[in-house]
Image 1 (cartoon, helix red, strand yellow):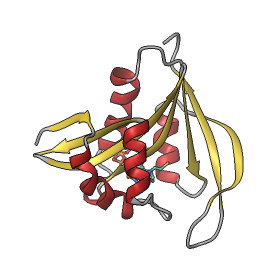
Image 2 (cartoon, helix red, strand yellow):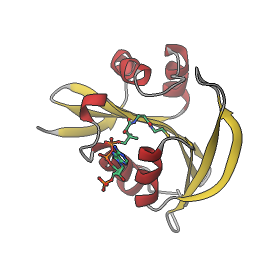
Image 3 (spheres, protein in one colour):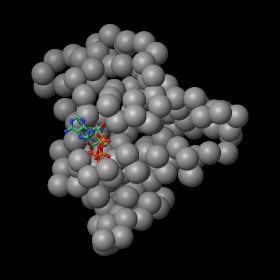
Amino acid sequence: MKNTLRIMTPDDLAQVFAIEQVSHPSPWPMKGLQESLQNHVAYVLEQDGAVIGFAFVQRILDEAHLLDIALAPSHRGKGLGRELLRQLMDEVLVSGVTIWFLEVRVSNVTAISLYQSLGYNELSLRRNYYDGPEGKEDALLMACSTGMG
Ligand SMILES: CC(C)(COP(=O)(O)OP(=O)(O)OC[C@H]1O[C@@H](n2cnc3c(N)ncnc32)[C@H](O)[C@@H]1OP(=O)(O)O)[C@@H](O)C(=O)NCCC(=O)NCCS
């Protein structure tokens, strides 16, 4: 099976929305995804013509901020999330980027472990950053320096 990382288009949004809904306690609505596609860097991971994962990244000067990343549930735990983020950091968003930031729920041990293994460190705690059906939750702010850009 061939996995391809490519730029997201509006035609991908229905599949991205479906993955988003089963990936987060407070998923983005379609409008949020559409606005992110217009305003930020957006990539999908495609397998045999189907979107199986995606990521949104905000660029601000030399900073890249990972806004959202998710894999379809049946494709998780196979190294694809790591490969998606690694390719974005090492190949796609290299020029001019010196540091990556992200927020992650303190309970999301899978994602935290993935980020740590890619070189992210904890910077601080953002209290009550997330809302959701279970109530508010703190976020870890994590950062990874990527050199001179
Ligand atoms: C987080 C997510 C993108 C990771 O992608 P993935 O393809 O499942 O992860 P990978 O298979 O690439 O695994 C990468 C690392 O994550 C960690 N990991 C993966 N599955 C795990 C699990 N069940 N428990 C703990 N850690 C786990 C491990 O560190 C793993 O590295 P290793 O295989 O060398 O041990 C994916 O699980 C997902 O879409 N989750 C729901 C959405 C989400 O939480 N997004 C992040 C929001 S900040």
